[in-house]
Length: 303
Image (cartoon, rainbow, N blue to C red; front, side, top):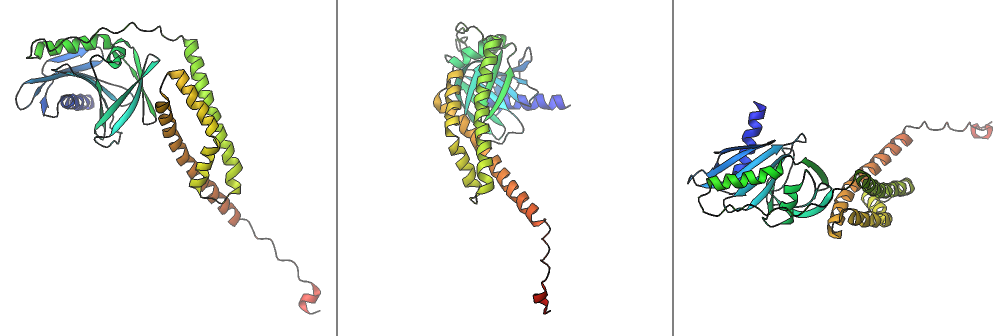
């Protein structure tokens, strides 16, 4: 029953992906590996609108691929725990088999569902078609996708449009992917991960050390102290950004945005730690027994 409900919800999302009009489907069903889908029609006119497929992951994300009758491609991502604002633009960095990233922008269609255009001549569709794995970096989070059978899925969706489409020549297949670069060896990937994690560790250690030096001896507000800590560790932050650019080939703007998102979370954690530390210190001081009053001297009692 739960599986049927998930499939029904996924079908409803795919039905709305290519057109804002009410859609019905899947009419002609499609199954490629773990991908499920088919063709969809306009619920009012009955005319074919698009073909789409989806796959669900253990993370709770459902991943969608859609191509409409004009051969416009889109990717979609849905998770019931997300809380997005409809219309919100979401910068996303996509890496395929450890290569990339490809910079894209998603648009929130609802609080739990976002769409990414995939132009037919873009680097995105070439990388997607040839890859066996994809990682998406968005809003400070990383999501991993195993892309089983995508090399078969895209031609199957094109064939679906060809069979259903009522416009001749509208369903030209997407271009063949460019020759894939050799995959990174496990040793290179491990070394790259070690270096970026090491740089992140140095940055975090700097902030932790500054917290120890400043918090017990300052009366400034928690917000000001957190900002001072971040400022004092700006050099470690710059090195982390530079290494991210060198390791992953991303633009400075993209890496700085991701680091800023990470710092925003860490500042909130620092503020919480400072407030907690001060509360516990105050509580400990108030619970200490007061020292006994000094014994009275003879002169004090009139002897």
